[in-house]
Length: 275
Image 1 (cartoon, rainbow, N blue to C red):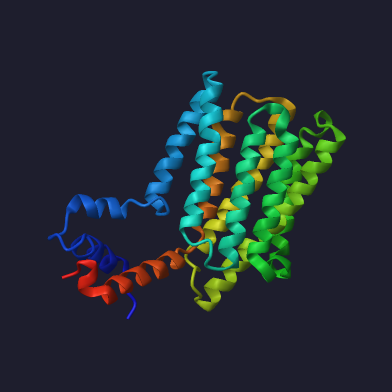
Image 2 (cartoon, rainbow, N blue to C red; image 1 turned 90 degrees about the vertical axis):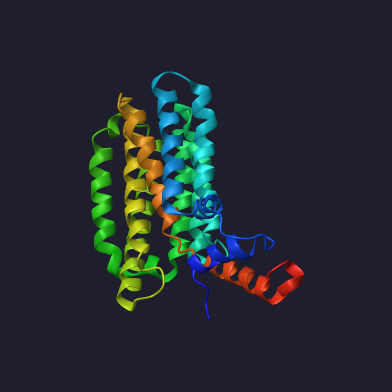
């Protein structure tokens, strides 16, 4: 019989502590506060976002250079812990988040917007790989066309200020982002219709990809106009998108490994100090 998460926590504190006695409330809290869980990950990302935005606004580049890759790395690590070996979807999303980490590094200097856009475009290819056949489904075309229209309207407002190579790159990244958004939406609809595992977290990927597409378009506008509100809105929106994408990975793989660990303790018996 499968072991629930609550049973695992009881075993880890009551029986797994080398048989030394009763449950310890503080140990239970530490077990519950794991980075791959939504509250913990959200709190860590919020702290990193606040520090990074403060560094941008108040002219502290050392804070930006430290906390930008650190926050993106935390999101990628959380995706890994949720079960990167579970299936194709988890692997594709994890690779995409890693590419977004390199995009964040490239985007720290304002001149790196082209390199950042390339990494973001590569990340959308990884997200399309994660969705598999859903990326080619015709059901998502209306949503993809809508996303393209919104991006086109945003970029058209500043296109005279963009160089032709950067404009072409923005168009390419926009098309890839729209296709990835449609793929996530098609996957979410398919999982929900079939009642398959992961259908509850699948809509998070749709929202996350939509925010990622919007943040990328706003970066292009910022590159052309250098608006004052860019540091306050774009980077937090970008990290919110990545956090939602990481949380869209069901953590069934971690549950399996935990259940196997509990079974190993049960099988070991007195040799592991279990009463």
